[in-house]
Length: 277
Image: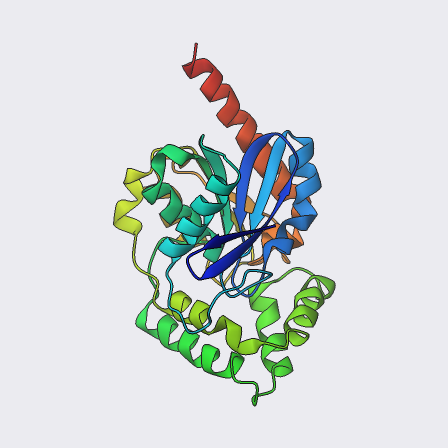
C-alpha cells in the first residue's frame, strides 16, 4: 500500500483493526522483518502498520536524493495522514527504525503515545564508525564488487540468530538487482545527528529492548544510556536473553519480543485508564 510524499512513494502494510502501532525496520532490512511478530501483536488488539524506509523494500525513492532520519519521521507522519489516524500511536523501531521513532517523537509529540525501541541508540556515530559506514557503502553499492562475501560477513553482526535467520536476509540481499538504490540510505546512516541531549523532551512511556549478544548498535552501554535519558523508561531496559539474541532480535526472537511489547502496551493502557479516572 503506497503513499506519495514529495518525490518518494512510501510503501507500508496495514494489518489488524485495533490500536495502531507503527513499525520502522532496521538498516538493509524492510517491513517484512516484522512479519514474525505481526500475528501476536494483532491478537493482542494492535493494528500493525509497518513502513518501508527510503532505499528499502517496496518504497520508491531517488538514490541520489539526500535524506535524514527526520525525513523518515515525516514519511511516517504522511502514512498516518493517509490512513486518517490523527490520535497518538505507539511507535516501534529496530536499529535505524529506532533513530526514526525517536525523531518522530521529538517532532510529533502529540502523535506519539509510546515508544518501543529495539537495538538502537540516540547518539551520533563516532568518527571511526562514520568512516567504516562510508567504506561499507562504497563496496555495497558498487555492482562490480562481489556482494556475497560482504553479505556473509555482515549477517552475523547485523542479524544474529541462527544460520537460517541470517540466510533469509543474505538471499534477499543477493537477489536484489539494484544495489545502488541504497546510496542515500548509507549516507544518512553515516551522518546521522546527535539527539541524546533532547531525549528528556520525550515524556511518553518507552520500552528499550536489546539482544543479550548485540554488538552492532544496541549494546548494553547504548541501551543503558537510552533508558537513562528517556523519562518514560523509569531508567530500565529489557534484555532478550540467549547467546544468539543479537542485533535483529525483533526478527530472530519474535516470541519474547512480542511478549515484551504486549506487556508494555498493557501497562500503558492501565496507566491511561487510571489517569482518565
